[in-house]
Length: 196
Image (tube, rainbow, N blue to C red):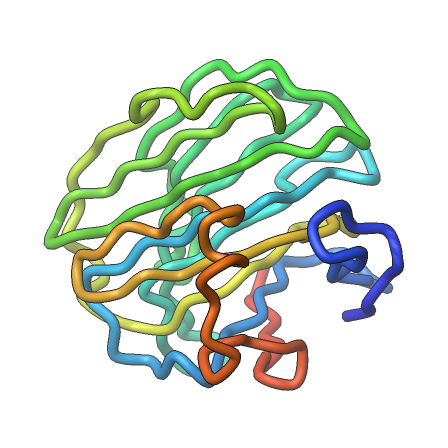
């Protein structure tokens, strides 16, 4: 992972720099690994134009070779917004057409509450839409929160997390009311590689 001076919100962004292909996630240690009802809101872009990037992970757990996680994201070549689960193979939970482009910032909101999984994606500057995908699954009951990629190098400009069934507020509201005790930095991340 690298910090680049290329982000719009705060002037910097986090880039996952993968030297070899594969599935990568970085979990936030500061949030712990026992979350059940959790939401992530993030602003990201695909800088490579390849499939399966970027990804937003909830309820991650397991050991090397036996990883489990729900993840959502958008894919530029396939033009889709999706939810998958990894158990330890990747299985689609739901997807919908979502036209997106390389090097353009998009927002993704991904929420898991009980056995309900919801996600939506939208281009930066557009209004936030209704949930685009709403599915149910009970494969993973709790775990860590993180960001990731597959075979590419996405940028993440802003990431917010809410636990306990709360909703992540707009980053513009968050920045104004931020308590610096709750800021997550790149040093709070642990990198994980999942088997392909």
